[in-house]
Image (cartoon, rainbow, N blue to C red; front, top):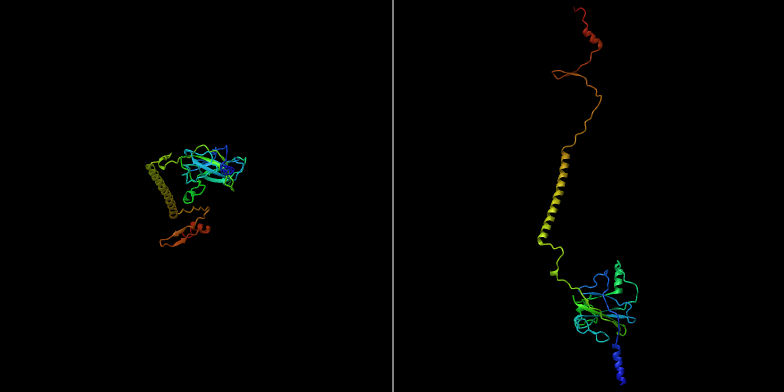
Length: 282
């Protein structure tokens, strides 16, 4: 009897796990974008929730499952492939190191390095790893595969020691979190709808505007060339020169034979001799 009780205690006690009164949830912050998409959801990490342990496992299950166990415990854990992505029961989605207990608030920064460091410290995204889906023959224990669009999910945190892999504490299941539903491409109605005729008219107007600009540029080039040709053919006349006190030239006598003789001015004596009568002429 004692042996039976001893064996029962050894087998049952590791399966027990304390449940912490904490529910994983999506951060209530309007400054953080894309917390819920069609295939992913971002949860707040359990800061100052677990007092012991080193590794935190994330479990997920579709909220439509008929019987969701309240505790994961140390029972057999199913994989993503075995549960069809949480459609038949909980599966281990991912694991991360237990976050340090800190009281520093989450501050949105503009530095990409700081943003990534804060996200890794405070947040965890589920559904952003599709590589595990290709490992069909040897599926991994954790598979953070994309979630189903428009489906409601519930999540749970469980902490364990890396050396023993035995769970110490776990949280409550989160409330149902609905992922966004991706719209079909044919159902998308653009805000500013444009018909085919409007597109054709716009293209024609753009072509005409281009041709008009080309014609205007060619007209300017022709006008410049014509101005240069006119300037080369009709040079500007030289300005007239006016010389003051110009000396009057001597009078000349032209003969019929074309010989030009200089007309000399008579002296005063010769002038009077030509006027007085010659003696003895009377």
